[in-house]
Structures are given as C-alpha cells and as structure tokens.
Image (cartoon, rainbow, N blue to C red):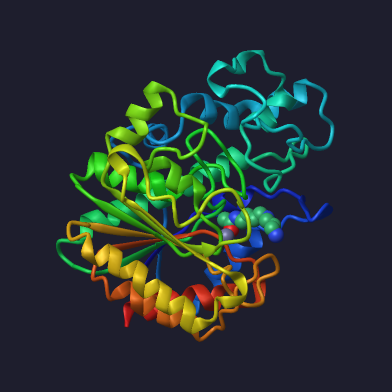
Length: 378
Ligand code: Q9C
Ligand code: ZN
C-alpha cells in the first residue's frame, strides 16, 4: 500500500492541553506520527511517498473549497497578532461563542481582539497553546492537507488501472472535528473534507462516502456536507459553496455516544435539506463497545454504504483511539479487532483513502494502524 507522509506535519508541537481541569502534556504529539511511520516502515507491504509539490491550482484553493477565507486567514495570522498583543507564553481560548450569547451572523470579526478571536474560532480548549516563537500550527495543518490531497490524487490516478486498492495519508494534525470556520479537538483543517471536495470538484467524481471510525464523532466532517442541525446557520454564501453544491457525500460514523464533542453525533441527525438521509450516526455506549459489538455495528455501517450503489470512493477517517487502553477514550477494543475492521472495509470493494485521525496509546498505535491496513489488503 502507498503511504503518503510529510515531515512538516511534525512541526505543530504544543506543550500542553487541559484535560479534566489539569494541565497535561499535549496528547496529540508529533511522536504519534513518528511511531506509526516506524512501525509501517518495518513491513514490506508499505511504500512511503512524499507529498506532490506541483498542483494545477494554488494549494490553498483546495483548502478554501471547504474552509472560509476568514478562518484560514485567522489560522495563518493569529499567532503574530497575539505576539503583537503582548502574549509572552501561551494563549488558551477562554470565552466561546455560545449559541445563547448572541447571533453569530451579526458578529464583526474585525472588531474582536486577537485573544477574543481564539474563542470565537474554537470549539473547545482541546487544541494548542501557542508558545512564543514556536508556532507552526498553520504550516503543519497545510502540510497535512497537502499529503491528503496527494494521496487522493494518486488514488484517482490509479484506480482505473488497479481497482479496489487502498492508499494511506499518514498525517497530523487530525481533521474531523474542524468545521468550515471552527477548530477544536486537536483539529484545524478538515483533511477528509478537503479530499472529498477535491475528488468531487477536480476528478469528475459524482459521489463519495466518508466512513469515520475514530472514537469521537466527526462533527466537522458532518458539518461540511450536511446542513447544520442547530441554531448556528451558515451564511448564504457558505451554504451554497460548501453544502448545496454537494448533496452526494454520504457520512457514516461510529463513535462514543457519551464523550467529546458531546453535543453532536446522535442517531437522530440524518442530515437536512438536500442532504437529508445522507448522514448516519452509530453512537455506542462506551462499556458496550467490545470487539464483537463494534464489528457488528461496523457491518451495519458498511451495509448503508453498500446500499448507496453509486459511491465511487471511500474515505476512511482512521482513528484507533477505540483501543481499550487509549488514555482518553473508553471503548473496549482489543488488538485483534483491527484486522477485522480492515477486512470489513475491504469488503466494500471501493477505492479507499485512509486518513489518519486519533489514537493516543503510543505503545500500540503503530501496530493497530498497521493491522487495519493489512487487514484491508488481505
Ligand atoms: N475525556 C481526535 O481524536 N479531549 N480528537 C476530550 C474527554 C479532546 C480528540 C477529553 C479529544 C479530541 C481527532
Ligand atoms: Zn478521536
């Protein structure tokens, strides 16, 4: 299997996060990526390739197909604004745009202080603290998008010649919590949404499925292609740009019913407007999620994709934070489950793009990722 990897993904390296009220080392560390890379390197099944530098359009334009210009600009410039504002050590978003606080559409971003903007554009405190002179968050997020786009491009180039093959984009920061103008849960740019949009807009693809097997609900991926379900409505422009033009992205997710991001991911969210019926959530209670229950539910999710006959590509948000010893998650999966997950995904028979999301148990991270990919290839 081709594995796309770029070392720039390592340069986002925040020291801390808040976990249950305590300052702890940042769990979504560069070490994660190095460990997966090292494990895959030991197997002859994987070939490592670098991100493509040569693109028909500016790389940012593929990102701007799913994220707003204001948001991308925020990621690019906020660190310098904080330094100008006198920030010496770190910024943690402190005040969030609660839906009962004010109407988001009347918000004038240009009048917000840089510190306030940290909370306006973030979903939760689970992201980075910025330390002076060490901010490479935007650079790493763009590098991840570039790696994922390269993998999607290779898959589209190859799939006529070699049907049903998989490709792996080994990236961080992860993406599935990032919405069009919101970061959170260690995510800044929504890598799978960027890949899906690329296949739809540039590769003549009519329909894509995103299968999200990260432990957490991918609120961002869901948001990108289905209309929002709560009070926060997109602007007319973003509704047309991001949602209405693409009613044929199927989003199917297995995740913990009772964990981060807490407020999204119920089975009742089926999509809205032209997207109704294209969103399927499978929330699982943490203590129920054994290997057999998980694989049984994954079969149901796979059946939904199988029954939507026209899907041309499958994009998998590959998190292995479902593992029983993951430090921040509560599922009960053993290491024997991961090859089975790969086999179930392979049974769909689609050209498949795997994109790295979560997984924080460093001792098993590489093996569990390898197991899914090798299970798929069998
Ligand atoms: N006990 C990804 O896996 N911390 N993001 C929640 C709850 C935030 C996870 C702690 C977890 C974000 C991509
Ligand atoms: Zn996760």
